Length: 173
Length: 160
Image (cartoon, rainbow over all chains, first blue to last red; front, side, top):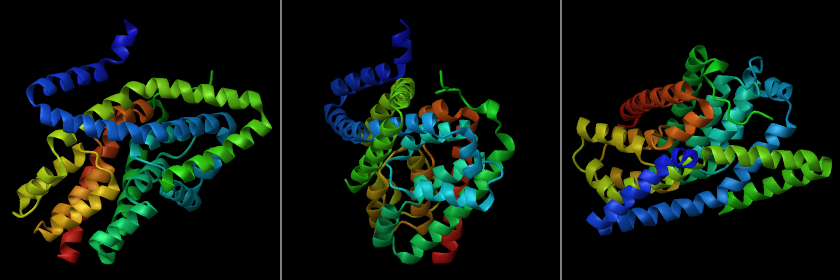
C-alpha cells in the first residue's frame, strides 16, 4: 500500500499516457518517444551521480566542505562552487542530490545557489553552442549577467533559508 | 557522449581510490547512494513522464510558431511560461533560439526563453524539493524567473 502511495505520481502519469494513446495516438507516440529519449539519458547519468553522492557523503568530512565552500570561505568558496558547477555533468536535476548533500555538510547556501546556477546556465560546451548560434557578444553578455544574477539570488536566499528548511534525505545511519 | 565518458572516468578514479582505502566505506557509499536514489525514484520517473507529455503536446515547431514572427509582450510572456515548464536540453535550445531570432523574435523574447529554460524548472521542482526543501526550491525558481526577465530586458536594451 505504501509503495502505491510512493509511486502515485508516476502511476497517474502512466494513466494519462494510456488516455492520450486512446484519444490522440499521434501525440501519445511523440510523447512516448521523448520519454524514452530522456530515460536513455537518465539511465547513463543516474549511476555515477548517486555513487558519487554516496562517496562524498562517506569520505568527505563536514569540516572539509565547511572550509572549502562554507560560511567563512569567501571569494575562494564562490570560485570553487562556480567551477564545480561548470564541470560538464548532465542536466540540472542531477545536481540537486549533490547540492543537497553539500548543504547538509555545511556548504554556504549562496555557494550552493552559485553551484546550481553555473551547472544550469554557464557550462563550457553550452557556451560554445551558444556562441555558434547566437554570436559572441550575446553569449558574453548573457554569461556576465547570469553570473551576477546567480550571486545576488544566492545572497538573497541565504538571508531567508536556514538549516531547518532542508530535508533530511540521506543522513548516515 | 564526451560528457558521459568524462563522468565515468571521474567516477572510476574516485571508486578506485575509495576501494583502495577502505572496502567497507565503499560499500557504505553504495548503500547511501542507493537509498537516496530509492527516495528520488518516483520524482525521476515523474520527470521523464511529464517531459514526454509536454514536449509531445508542445514540440519545437509549435514553440517556434508561438514565439516567432509577431514580437511583443505576448511572445515574451509565452517565452517565460514555455521556458519555465519545458525541459529542453541546452544544446538543442540554442539552435532553436537562433532560428527564432532569424524568424523575427526579439532579443528579449529569446533571452527570456533561454534563461528560464536553463534556470527555472517546474517539472523538476518535486525532485528539487526532495533534495533541497520547499522553501529553497520556491525561492530559487521564483528569483530565477525574475532574474530572467531583468537579464532579458538589459540584453534587449544593449543588443536591441
